[in-house]
Structure formats: structure tokens, C-alpha cells
Image (cartoon, rainbow, N blue to C red; front, side, top):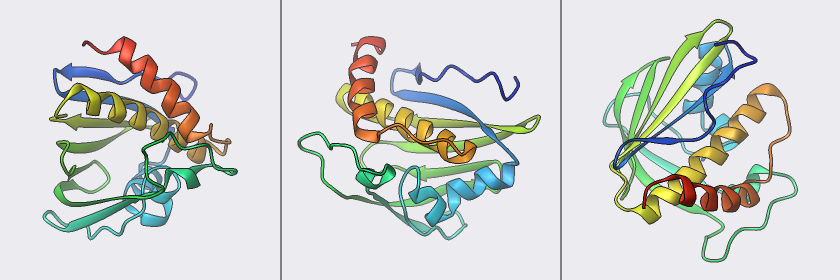
Length: 177
């Protein structure tokens, strides 16, 4: 795999309640690790929130998806301007793996693997409670990771909410009922 090729952009179910999605990002691995663990960098593609780098440490993630693009995209009805989640780190292997309990929807593991000058990021979201959550999460991870690719490559990110809405419909067609 080179910087010109990338894994399939679509997330896939590896088990009935487990979503796996990957992106090839420009390295080095320390840079991408910072995008996962540093609140200010993570805020630019996913959610803010300080992290103490130890297993069991509490984490509060704060999503403000309207702020991921300038100008902000239009938020679908029923979604708040801000979403907060209390969580904790469940597994930590610096520069390789970070797992976080995901309040009310399982747990998420981020794994980094050097690939030449790039870094393969694998996000695995386990124990999704139902299909509705699975569709929201699939579209969300897809868009958040596309924004991470844009941020790490110096490109402009697509509008979050418009992409999320489109992807939600597409995942509804792709994932089993």
C-alpha cells in the first residue's frame, strides 16, 4: 500500500455489532498519535477533551461538529450543537493502540500501523447496540475520518453534516437490515 492507494473508504461489519473502518494517513506515526490524543488536534476532526495517558483515566469527549468546517454546515434536525460523553481509557499502547469505552454504544479502539511513509489508522467500534446507532456511527466515523485525512494532508474538508446525511443513507443501503 502506498500513499496513492488507500483502504476501502467504507466501514464494514466484521461481526454483527462491530464496525471497522480504515484510513491511510501521512506519517510519521507520532504525528497521527497526536491527532488521537491531543485535545486541540483531535478537536479539528473529532472531539475535544483532555486525556491523561493511562488505563482507567477518565475522558470527556466534546463534539462540536458544526465547527469542523468554515462556514459550518447545516446540522440535521434533532442533533444538538454540542454533545458530551464521559468515558475512560481501557487500553493504551503508546503510538500503537488506544481503546476508549464509548458511553452507551460499546467501545472504540484506534490502532496505528506504519506503512512506508504513511500510517494505517484502523478504528474498530464494538458492541453497537442497534441498527439505528450503527448507521449513525458508521456515517459519523466515515465523515470524521475523511476530515482527519483532509487535516493531515493540508486539504479542505468536506462539510461534515452534509456528508454525514448522505453517508447515513448510503450505509443504510450497505449494512444488513
